[in-house]
Length: 217
Image (cartoon, rainbow, N blue to C red; front, side):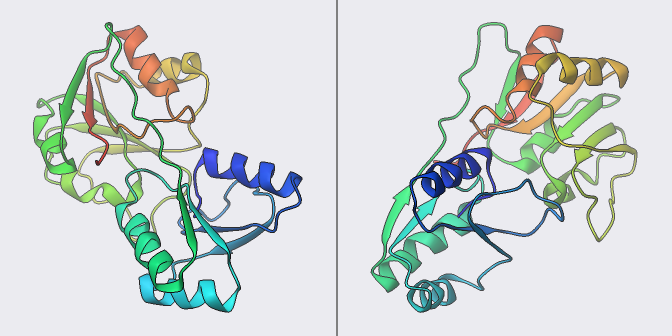
């Protein structure tokens, strides 16, 4: 169960060891990064159907290396593993730890994050295209949102700029992006790992406040 940088790295390691690996991707990104081994795109339709797929394809082990906020996928993996009697290995990222220079406002969900933004701010919204709805009522905020692919249903934010690009792993590039767009607040989830951490460092170096959604337990 992939879709993360860590999952892609793990697939490469397992294939190099001679293992047969199938990486399952949700399919939201039309041009995902290359992944070693076989790739399956799209959902399974729930835990029961996933269990049947595991049995039909003679899978001997599931590795859940999904995004830590992909809670439903992880729940389905646990139930499917039990139904199919397939071993389950959960690879969970550790959350980012607040640095003494970080200006963090920690919140529990997207709705609270949206309501915490001060009026008139220019907000870099780094949460993914499927999570924009809670921010649509903030007509008093200018949003900068970055996506790899624009959502099929469009964007309903009242005032926004869309940047089509992958996040940079270089905090200096992220800082230049923030400065060029006069970003005054960053909103993101505490997803952990190294792949998306550059924006956190950039906000730290520029003394930009971060409204950060806590990683689910």
